[in-house]
Length: 440
Image (cartoon, rainbow, N blue to C red; front, side):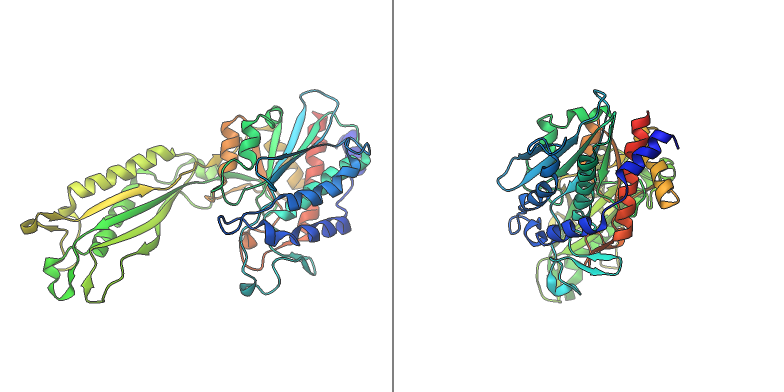
């Protein structure tokens, strides 16, 4: 390690645990009011912003106490984003930590073993809604920027932190990072690596999945179950039709060779997750039902192509519905005497594409090196969970890399917690990222 790099690491030091826990306690104390599930629960992210500002303002140009440049940007009342900049000496040389969102998913206190809306400590565990996702990271990056503002190291690189609103639910548009990009407030971040800090388990997450939510409505003919020959059983048609759709999907979109390179836990999948049908007696063969589910698509396949293929499958099945397998001697999907044919109707909700991070990026290499130095090993991974915001950033020309220091096992879960030791390692990784990139 170069002497200048070592000196910078020593200058920035390690995470102030007491300061971190104190700030995190304040943030978790607001978590009930930043739950994001409109229309019932609309988060007020400025409650979080205010605590971050209280930590950073003393070291900002606003008060004259330090070099931090702070920009509070709100597009909806009470729902702000926060851009914090530590200026470097070389124009255009920059790195950023983005994605630390200030909203959380909902929590029902009746289902938890402890109060989700106040921080509790159990040994190394820091417990409460948002500790892993993502208020724990908000506090962590706040402490990083605070340390820069306090110690004022001479950096070539400008370091920027972007704390965002409205990540967990996008049903109210025009609130968060999408607007910051639209208004070109993040354009200068394209000059260097952007580290999205909202994953887990201390390893680089280099790939995410796309998602295509779908609904398959099936129309048959309702009739008495004792006269099954006069019915078209919508449930049987749904089962057989969906089986055929899935068979064709896995034929056309098999495991992709790049999935091994990126370490995806699963290939692309297409499966049902919900089933509904009109209420009726047990002696009625249903005339309609709806099966819903999703496609999780690795980023090496095109979302629009998959949607087109799925519709082609359905159209072909409808044209040849009498060729589908049936279930028993009187099961059928066509009633010629009544000129009736069973039918599948496919529809989609909003789809999103996955992301494959650039494995040749300097940002990826410094993240891996920093992780190996601090954690002791590096093993990049990919999942078919979705992070549509980072796909949007990548499409806009940002060099996005992702990592996080909560626990995947408690992500969006009951009894959420993170580990203080993991967050300490996260701070150390950030310091080494800054140090490495400043030597280039």
